[in-house]
Amino acid sequence: MSIVSSAVREASIQSSPLRVLHVLEATLGGTLRYMENVAECLRGTDLCLGFAYATARADSRLEPLLARLENQCWKLYPVPMRREIAVAAELESVGKLRSVLREFRPDVVHCHSSKAGVLGRVASHLIRPSPAVVYSPHALAIPLGRQYLYIERLMRKLAGRFIAVSDSEAGDIVHYQLATPDRVTVAYPLIDCDYFTPSASRDTSVRGTGRLTVMGVGRLTAQKDPLRFISIVRRLQETMPDVEGVWIGDGELRQTFEQEIAATGRRSIHLVPWQRDIRPFLSAADVLLSTSRYESFGYMVAEALALEVPVVASRISGTSDILTGEFATNMYELDDDAHAAALLKRVLQDSVAARKWAASAREMIRERFNSRSMRDSLLDAYSRSAWTGRQTRGRPKTKRASGIDRRWAAEKAGTVIE
Image 1 (cartoon, rainbow, N blue to C red):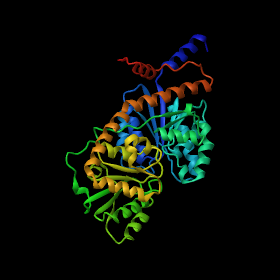
Image 2: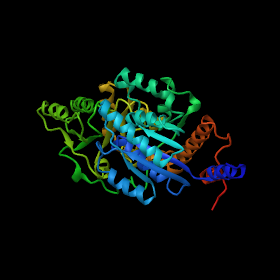
Image 3: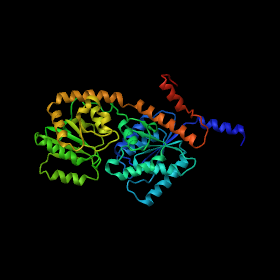
Image 4: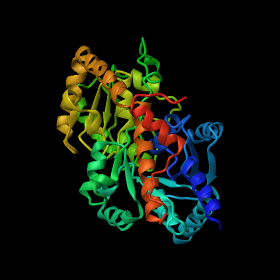
């Protein structure tokens, strides 16, 4: 190959759009919500984007998201990935992901959550040249058992950079020695305050029969701890018998949850199936109770506050990044049912003060969790990762000069590129 043609090829590589492939197995709940945020904040940027996704656990929001990504010219790749561990299935998933990587040729692979984090990282390191890899845990499952810590530490060297969705999750990543602070970027999700707008009048038709409603929302899993929700509401009802509890969601603990409700002999706690639009239900609640044992961020807490609904929540990573300063007074320590019930009682007995508190919280949500902030954080992480990856693979040590880098740098400097 001539020197001239080599120089032309290198110039073409340097000016080409950055190619980023997202990999997600858990196409439901908060991880899917984050992908919706990614699609929104990266819309119109100079990136070539792809999405490798599973459908086994998908909820109703996946199909609309795929249609949206297709309209935004993303490349879509369905991949057989499952939550359950089975050697044959894992090998099939890795093989399929390798084929996707060869076809899409990403500069950066962004793996989301633990299962895709393992499969995507392994597949990326089985091809040559290997793309740069970034990994978003979306809540480290370490509180559920040390085996999760062993897996994360085993895989930590297969990701050049971590993207946390909150400062506290970034702290956990460093605390568990999965990465050094310089290899962790925080990209907060966005909360659409135009979509989550407080209703002028609350729709009481979605409420149960009680006068006051404590609401919980989420998958019926150990992470969300719905049985703790029942325990706290029961304790509250000892002094406020007119209170009822409503949980919206479904999951593996549904039968246990229903049995626990039935054991009370009273119809004071209700289970409502998943709703396509949660806003009427959240708006009708007097207070949202979050009993999660761990979170990367805690969408439902932020969305409730955007609707000006008061919140009482467990003091955990993710949630503690939302309820900061004066808002932290509405958090309780894990397993402290008495304190949680006391906080709920205070909110319910002084609804005027509670609503004023929630209105202030809405303004905080609008200022902190927006599209531009998330976009800038992601572009910075991808640019850093692609540059580092090129150095690692022995390519020229010149930072990629794609259009997205130029536009991002200009915006940071306060100028505009048309």
